[in-house]
Length: 101
Image 1 (spheres, rainbow, N blue to C red):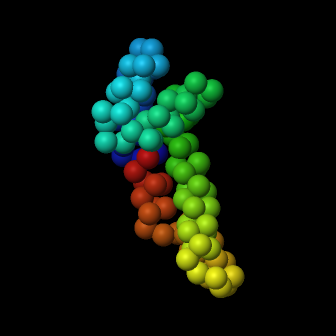
Image 2 (cartoon, rainbow, N blue to C red):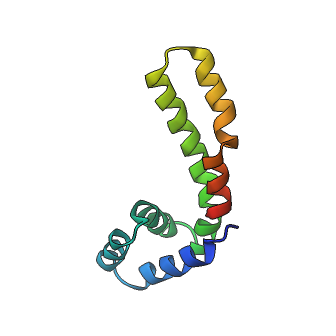
């Protein structure tokens, strides 16, 4: 559980207390709009506590897949894709996702 987890939970509770329009307005006026919208959509299926706690588990594989596709577009060597697949989960960005969310 990251340092920002209580803040995300408070924001998500605030978004869930109103209707969808007010939740989207709150998310868009925040500097983390896409994350808040993703949290709001996932919290309609799962409990808000679980969503906030396990969002890094969803974002890290997504980050790795996007990294692989980006390198695939830029570089034509297959070995490079394998290196990215091995290195991306342990990068500073992935560790930031673990400890910040």
